[in-house]
Length: 150
Image (cartoon, rainbow, N blue to C red; front, side, top):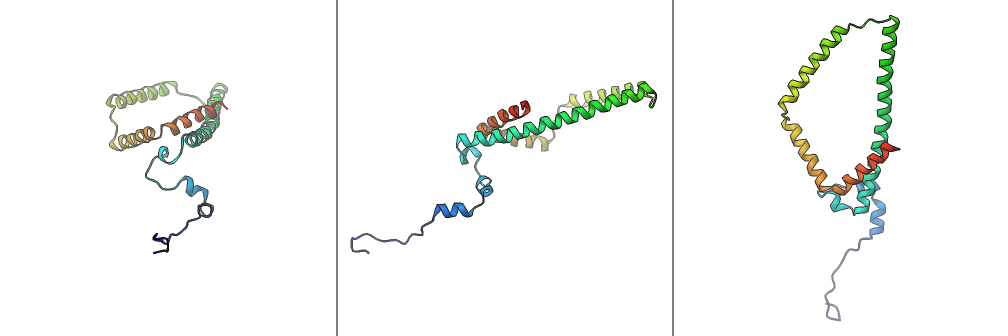
C-alpha cells in the first residue's frame, strides 16, 4: 500500500508506435482474423481495397480479353485464307455433324440442371462472403467496371 492509501499495481507499458513499426504492413492487412472485412476495416478502407483490386482485375481482364479475341479472330482469318487459296480443304459435312453432336450433348447436360455437392458448397461459401462484405464487393464491382472501361 502506498502512503495515499491506493494500491499500486505493476503494469507493463506497450509502446504502440514501436509495436506497429516492428510489424510488416502485410501482416496488418492480411492478419488472420475470424471476422469479415466489415468488422476489421471502416467503410472508406473497404471501398478503397475493393475499388483498387476491382480496377486491377478489370484492367487485366480487358487486356487478356482483347488478346484472346485477336488470337481467335486472327486464327479464323488465317484458316479462311488457307482454305480459299487451297492449302487446306475443310470437310463441312464433318464440321456440321460434330457441331450437331455437341449441341445434343449441351442439351442433355443442361436439361439435368444438377450441381455437384462440391460446387454447391463453394457457391454457398461465395454467397456468405458476399453478404458479409457488401461494401467491399460493391467497391470491387465498381472498380472492375472502371478497369474494363480504361
